[in-house]
Image 1 (tube, helix red, strand yellow):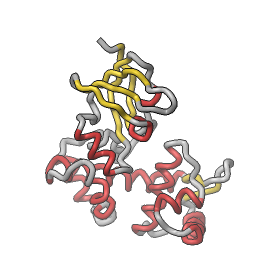
Image 2: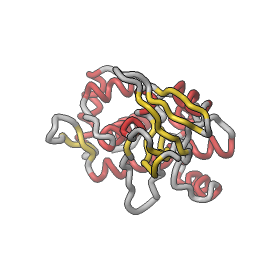
Image 3: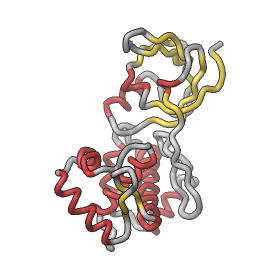
Length: 222
């Protein structure tokens, strides 16, 4: 089966859903891609016929070994392009995702290798997402979100979800990026914000934001 841009988009979405533990169903794929459920059903039949996806035991879809290999190839191109756009072209990190979505389908293997070499063979993109290697194993597991960090701990941000450009812009404005340490303070009761301290400045973050920040507890706040 020819891997067109549409096929690559579907495989990539299914890969992202599965690796985050979300159901890869017709309705969830339709919402993520902004298309109708009948359109998704038609494409799924094509992907099944091409031995790229199969039905999982939980009512959703799973990638076959061939489908996963193709998805990883697209994910690698996408994240390399995000890194290139951010580090070389100077595109803000809240804009690189949409630009890479367009360019990833036109990137040749030869140009991909040259970009990889130019960047020094990076292992993570600007959002902290791991860049799959050309060959060999790849670990896509997500660390715990800041939401789960206990009060009084110090938390190192390792990865930030890139699905919301406005949220990325806000987080960058207060200094929250991969590699940054935050001190976890009090949680306002009844669904209120979590207070965190970044470089000596305290900020209140609601659940939608703390769920975007993933990393690890590395100690207690001083």
